[in-house]
Length: 87
Length: 365
Image (cartoon, rainbow over all chains, first blue to last red; front, side):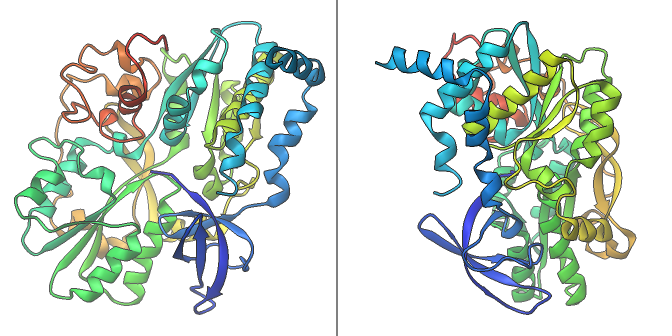
């Protein structure tokens, strides 16, 4: 039930106290309330739950999981082992 | 889809799984709190990538599963009224009540509509001034801002034929109840990334300190979950118990304060019963006094309706991480998604339904 989907803001409209956005999810676009994320602008990604954007996705933070993977101790040796297995 | 597909990368998944194997020196039991995470873990077989020392138990974070029987019965009674249009998210319709589920009411002619957002129900109320439109407001902190806005807008616009049947629950009191139990097996938590998107994670910090338990706010894709497991295990192996944030692309420490402010205006914290678990003090939301005219329980005179829950199903123990679905004698026998005994078999996010759908019999879990 707490499923929330990331989508790209294409357009922002509506009154300042109740802004809405056209948000694209893959091939589908939907009207979404931006009342809780009023600073979202076209081109940014928001996380949407039951018709409401709940956060903006931070693009820098989005890469953290891959940076973390690269930084993990002893990863280099392990990658070599893995590659050896794959080859 | 961006921000989804890259977190399912098979090579990165095996690298994380290898890293987890490398740091694990002894048995640990972790609980993922959210039903969405349970679903992903079982669907993608994430638990099968973990070393045998690691046990993942599945938490109570499925609102469909924990909605008490008496709320389902109230929904059934309200939905059966000829003057009512009853609106709900689709997954509530098959949850068994004492005598019927909502699908049963619909089959007998009840006007039940599946909606995407509570705002759709407000629009229905505007379009049908001669009917009572009731929305079944079920959910955790993630869904509360949407439901709060629906009621708030109805109040501002003076829409009196709209009301919500509230069954809202909160994560931290459930975690406390699990940790306070003498039977608690959980040594570390993966907290629910979308709940924390709304609420932030400050309220988890005293829990981690009091119970000396690591809590890692975690997302929902395979890489998120594996990184969350890794971070949690690293804390356990190093003897730390902190709140860490794996899902930083969406979660900030303070959460979404605009959403929290409206939730605090429209709702107040109250005792709530959890299906299969019982009443947990101050573990849910009910409408604040200014919004009581929009409370369907009040409007239809069902406030004092209660019912005893049957004992044939071990869903309560599954929801607290004390039993696995396979340990129930009814699992897959008299209890299936077509004929569920308990709500954990109904919802897509329920642990029993996820095991039934994705697990071959005999796979060790």
